[in-house]
Image (cartoon, rainbow, N blue to C red; front, side, top):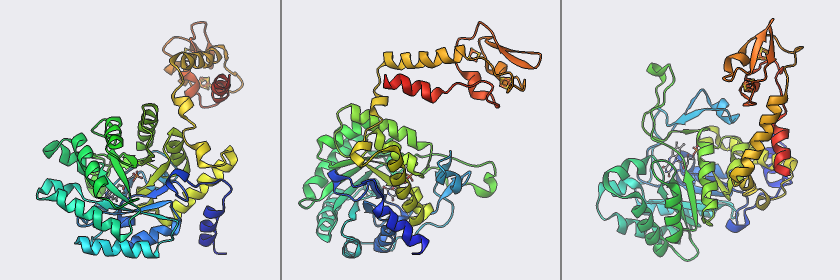
Length: 423
Ligand SMILES: Cc1cc2nc3c(=O)[nH]c(=O)nc-3n(C[C@H](O)[C@H](O)[C@H](O)COP(=O)(O)O)c2cc1C
Ligand code: SF4
Ligand code: SF4
């Protein structure tokens, strides 16, 4: 079997059960609205990775393509710090201009798409609101027609940067979320779910989720992509387009926080978190924070179906190794950690502090570089005769343990914290 086919085969045949039962999805991955989902052709191409759902991109705005990674795409795929922005290269043209054409694309995609992959379809675009006119009537018509065309769900985009740009100018963001969610929920066909994609930046995402939940949304997608101006130091040659669509691995912990906080504060809706997922561990973090599903955005565009299929397979392999048999056991598993009480957190920290304080320098490994002394702000360590030596002033803060390049200062921090946690 060729390697590519084997990869796809393994995704479906891994040991861990990746199905998301509450959403009737074969796995938690949602290929997010982007060039990788523009029109039936790209939806079908994205289907090669066998995701749980694909969101067909809005029609009629035709911008947003290319990807710019710094320091580079490979770093992002390894899960290392990396920013990502829309590139200066040409935008993907949108050949669909009317609702009728868009419905044809949806029909074709639904007809040809494997029946076990959900097709979500984007409704509206913030620029309709900016332009004025009777956008509400248009959106209602879209919701009705797209439901009839075969959409399993309709997605509303209140994510950044478009909304963030528009909201400052002409409308109240929270009111828009409430108004549009209620309106589209009413207009959608029977059984068609309403997915509400929300900005994490520039607003309080917990408030947005509460509003979406009370307005009848079926799922929320907290998504981090900012307005930003990022550049590498070679910017005269490689400056990316400033202002829009900034993401990257650094978005991941921020979105994970938003998910966990929402789970702690009464948000019971399914979530499809998005932002900075380039490797399986980042996807696992969203799920462990409490999200049922995970968006693949920049990875789908810039890594393609092979990188996404690999991510799905890696998640499955890791779940096998880590002892998670299904998505239910993984989902929200980190909330115990997120919710530990202040007292317990302090006790844990103190246990580590005691170990740092008690540990002595392993003179055989010490090369006398002085880094420990340099970062000690408590006169707890000093270099004597080219060897570091602890003093009785050490309070066990741990700075020096982080910088020692040779292991002369070492405590098994992970073991100590874990054993405290299990107690
Ligand atoms: C090139 C590109 C174009 C995008 N265009 C849209 C869009 O038209 N509408 C939308 O709601 N989101 C759009 N997104 C955002 C994605 O749907 C998704 O929410 C986001 O990319 C997830 O973050 P990640 O890229 O860090 O995975 C786009 C993303 C990329 C990378
Ligand atoms: S940082 Fe490590 S190797 Fe360097 S002086 Fe301190 S204990 Fe020795
Ligand atoms: S643990 Fe903190 S106080 Fe103790 S020697 Fe290291 S840096 Fe200094």
